[in-house]
Length: 289
Image (tube, rainbow, N blue to C red; front, side, top):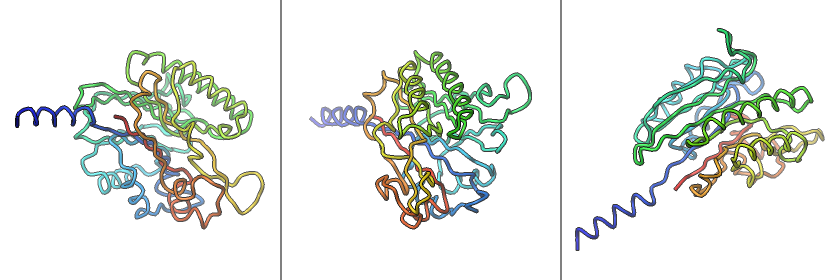
């Protein structure tokens, strides 16, 4: 009887084992030209509330400050960072929990930044692809961290659309693998369903992927075009899951000020310290069963 109970508990533990992944743009961490130094106490609170087995970060301007942040707030984690960050020197990084994943390999794809075929980094950010093996299942997972071209002008759109094409080509190489694309896609037209939204949806449809942000009200805030006191919600950040793995998604969670104000238009004081002193973006977290 005892042996049967132990077997049942072991089986239940395996079936219901969960793991999670998140993405967070840190707004020129650790010193933004307009917002100033990052509030490390508030960042630590946000990190703790949204801690995942795999965490993607964008806009790391100070590599040493990021290293210290990981050591302080993510004990038991290792991280991989890009060597290139474009003209703005905004690095990408993946931090992963060593108890959950083993590191296998990394690729820094500079075809997205304009620096391929040379020693240069290009003017935009590369895509960081990190392969990790989940220890519990011995399953290989590939995480492609992106920070695409910013802006809502026509030239910005055209550069970003070219990057969409590059991501479709990249996804084709991972059809038989487990690929997650995540980060700041700068999908400025996502909420208003403009031409950029149509191109983005076309790309993820042809790549047989879905964005977990499709059911979120926002992932970031900006000043908007009305000039009013309230800042406006937008959806710039995504975690793209292959269609074949969608049934593994257990929960999608939004953090920081986006969660706090439920993605409604809000004043700067309502958005609080996480907006003012950490980032205009918010973390997204997906939990898998």
